[in-house]
Image 1 (cartoon, rainbow, N blue to C red):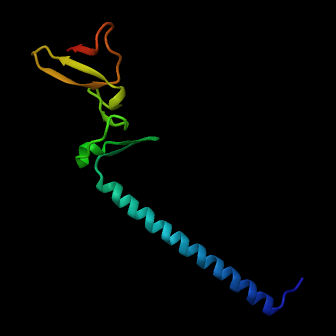
Image 2 (spheres, rainbow, N blue to C red):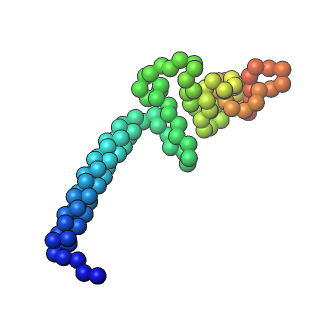
Image 3 (tube, rainbow, N blue to C red):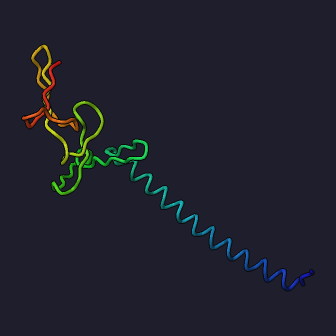
Amino acid sequence: MFITKKKHTKILKEMTELYAERHSKLTQELKEARDLKTILEKMSGITFNGQNVFYDLSSSMNISFSDEVAQYVDDLFGGKVIKQEANKAIIITKEGEVKTGLTKEKVDKGYKYKLIRE
């Protein structure tokens, strides 16, 4: 099957317009993605951990959230813990130094805090 030069030119023009439109859209999306990356890099309180993303904006930007908003804070034993679900923890070293913080570990039976003696 043969096509005429007029038909070929028409198809070529349509394809060129279609690809120019797609190129323009993809260029805009790339610009928006780069802008978002720049914003995220400036917010030092963001931690990427595998599939999870932790936002600790309150410490990096001095923003205070109400208790209804789930906030991630540092776990006393390493990692992150949701502040609203965390338990109080106390660590007492042999030298008598005391550290307090929050942890995701279970509290001791009959107590409202987790006590660790080192």
